[in-house]
Image 1 (cartoon, rainbow, N blue to C red):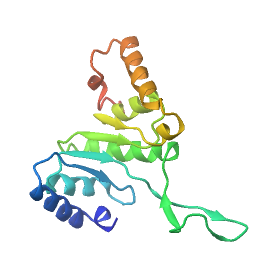
Image 2: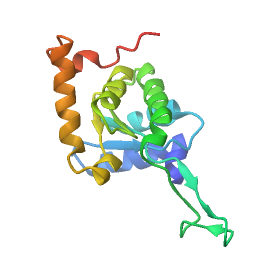
Image 3: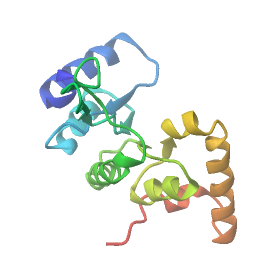
Length: 167
């Protein structure tokens, strides 16, 4: 995790991976930073072609009876709908930096509306994780919802909404 929170180390790791392969490279960014754009820029300068945002923020849970951490390693990753506002903000910040690579939105996507929000703030694609554990059909339902949204709004290609946030 250390290299994901330090721009210099991010650059070094991504650059070494880039030098060792011609395969497409996608780097997943940590939200546990003060400047997500600086880390994103370092990853792009290091040679990534795609950025995914975000990994799980650090979280913790305590058993009040034993007064011990619930998680075996004390800290763990918080995922699911709780992180969506954080992920949307970070993706939007990186999109605004115009780094020239596609962005993949991750975090709390359970419905087509969630996926659409990510695309509006700049995601070219989304990844669905936790929702698939709750409903194995979640991804199919999101795709169907995206189709409906496009049909209802006269959108020929979902990419038309990428980065269309009006502020």
